[in-house]
Length: 278
Image 1 (cartoon, one colour):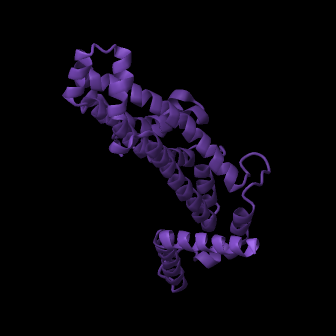
Image 2 (cartoon, rainbow, N blue to C red; image 1 turned 30 degrees about the vertical axis):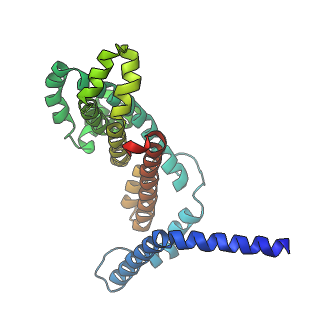
Image 3 (cartoon, rainbow, N blue to C red; image 1 turned 90 degrees about the horizontal axis):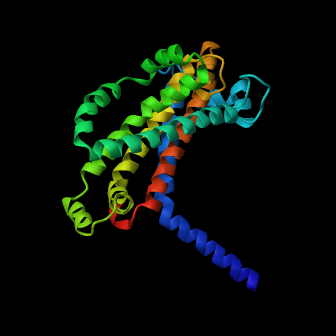
């Protein structure tokens, strides 16, 4: 009797869960399936000069990469999990440095009009330089692939954090500043009680934009830098060996990781920000 009640409650729970979230799941699944069907059709009739989804799955090298992502034969001959993990580690280091420097400089620029006027033209100039353009500069200056890749991630992703933080600090209501003066708050209390909470929505906007740019930058950097473990070099190496199916599979990994990183920053924003600032 208890078992039947438990089964009924379990089925009711899943039914309610499906009823609440069916559109959130069903529509994206339908969109993906529709995209794959169109791709399959265009490839089958020869309008698209790429292997079809069925051909990619049936190809042995691609199927092995899909089924065995954790293999490691040494050197750069590793599964897609290790290739992606190596790129992710570089992104984590470069992005963390960009977050620290970007938030710090953004607060400085936002609170000091003289520094803002002096540095804003330089910031606007540097932020428009594409990631690929930084690669030869980084290699020439640092002489090693790893630090050069970290620099490319840093210099690409720091600007949205810096500029959004500066805007957030400048947007602090004058009433808040007046209250801090009336209450004679110390600089430390003003910083943690007024400045940071008020600027947080802008800071998170910058962080969310920058995580996508950091992921784009490492892929671009690794394509140029030969002989390193990373998803970008894996793509270029597969392309030069005419393994387009492997390139497409790696793109799926890149898109999935990029989506996860974006959702992670969004989740962190929802956890940290007060309800009225969301």
